[in-house]
Amino acid sequence: MEAVIYFGEGVDGPLFRKLVAQMPQRPKRVDRHFFLSPDWENSTDLIIIPGGRDVPYHESLRGEPNKRIRAFVENGGSYLGICAGGYYASKQVIFEEGGELEVIADRELAFFSGRAIGPAYGKNLFRYDSQEGARIAKVKWEGEEIPVYFNGGCYFEGVASEVIATYADIEGNPAAIISCKVGKGLAVLSGVHPECTVEGDDSRKLLFDRILECLAIKKQRDGREGSCV
Image (cartoon, rainbow, N blue to C red; front, side, top):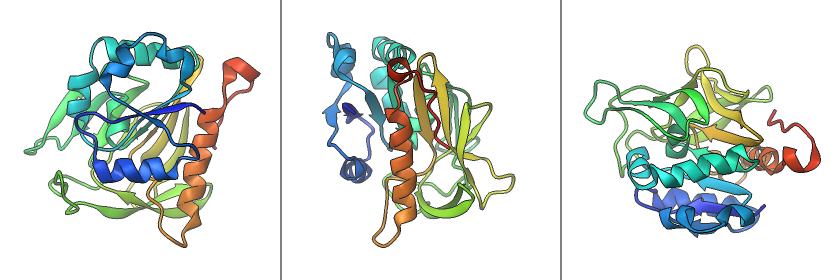
């Protein structure tokens, strides 16, 4: 896949580097100006929005960049949003409701028509630029519980094309990773960080590789229906 990864205001540098390191091919680093340039859609298969802060993403990409990103996916492109990138691609963000860091807002991409609600493990734990609220989450994927890095991410409430993984250690087992059909394209949104692997733990890498595999399926090219599960 020809992938681009957003690196603008709000992106978490260490998480960005971990994500790039897990990609089978190094993605092209881009900012908002890329999405305003001519014909970028013709040379791109996948857009990745990594972990960081949703509000700066919105401030930078709202309007024409989002309009073109949305059209790109509708016309058969793929989108991967991790943590903040998952919040950002949902119709509504509900973050730290009632707390000092509260964000309750609609978003333009709306690949997922429901709500991204977080932090999934409760309020008043997360701190920006800190590991204070970080933890190892347990997600259920293909019948197994997998430990995955979490720091302020969401769960998804509403109807998705597929629920790829659920939180195994949160009451009700809400959706942790989902896929959404968007016109001819596909968006995968994750509240956790499957790209953050550790030595000797192959389960997370298998999950991340499976996500990339399903995003690589181009329905408009080969007629197959993509599936992440």
